[in-house]
Image 1 (cartoon, rainbow, N blue to C red):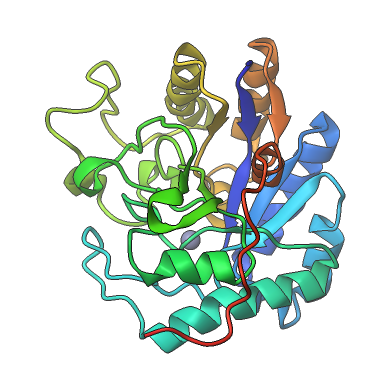
Image 2: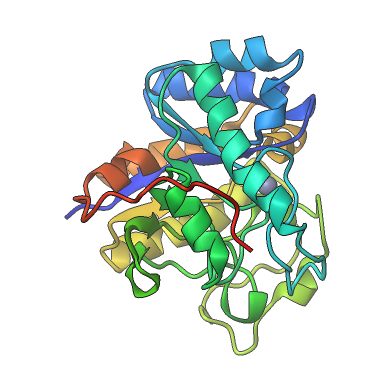
Length: 288
Ligand SMILES: [Zn+2]
């Protein structure tokens, strides 16, 4: 099976992401590339609702959830921030799905936890909550061993060991591009030694879209080398727009993916390739 590329955007910053999405969407239309937008649903409840509907309403785009307000849903060992109370977790998971479906008029089947975790949804009640809220996949593995970066290239798995074989996890790959640019935390504390990929070295913040592309290319090449089902990268419209308003890097990535003979997909399409084992009963109430 030839590796396919799944472009994905964590769309989360009021005011800053919608502007960047105008250019991102233009590149996708021009190059006929699908994408999954993991959106924070409170962006859809104010003045940006209409612009997002118009920009992301394109049939080639999947709209998935990145929670309602972007809190941490579990304690985060690397960011050293505690997760919000369980009642809010339930609200974030369920309200965002309803708001996205109301806004775009199509099912929202995917969930990406804010900031991601090394073990995705983990092995606690979040797995059951996501499954019983009607999601069929998560894309929440966003850190490598010991909460390091980059995230190693790995394939999808399901949560069968916890009793939820129909809930799939699609790990992210590579660097959070905002970290590569120094837009958030200092990357030094995220490095693993010895590294997963000794031949991959980032010596400082990337300075140009071409340098950013060169970092991302390593992980596309790795997915191809390992004959992975999919390749993906970790992108945020607000950060992409701040660094590279013309989105030159996106074009370089999409041209490269095409040149390597790969197609494009969305996470919803990757999930739809997998048969459902059983139907989950609907969640009737919050669990402790
Ligand atoms: Zn996020």
